[in-house]
Length: 136
Image (cartoon, rainbow, N blue to C red; front, side):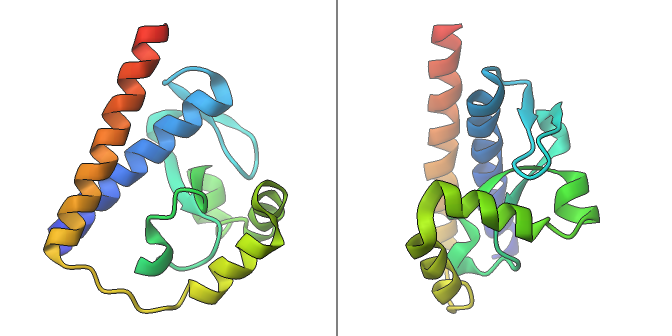
C-alpha cells in the first residue's frame, strides 16, 4: 500500500505545485512560497500543509495544501502561524475550524482509493499543463 500512497501523493503534490506556480508567477517554472513569498524553481518546492501532521483526513485537501519552500516547510517547521493567517484570510474561520476538527480523524484508504486519487490528480495536472501550454 505504501507505493500506492506515495504515487497518489506524488501526483497530488505535482498538481499543487503547478497550480500555484501558474497562480503566483504566471508560468510553470517558478513558484512563490505561500509563507515567505520567495520565488523558487518549482522543482525546489514542496506541497506544504497549513496544519501540522499528514493524516489521511487532510492529506489531499487542495485548499489546505499550497506551494511552500523547503526552508519554510522543513527548516522553519512549516511556518504554521504565518500559514494559518493566510488560510484564515483566504478561507475564513469556519473552514479553519473544520480543518481543525477533522485533522486527526482516522481515514483509511485502500489501494484502489489511492489509485483513484493518483489518477484524479494526474488528470488535473495534465489538464492544467495542457491548458497553460495552449495559452502560452
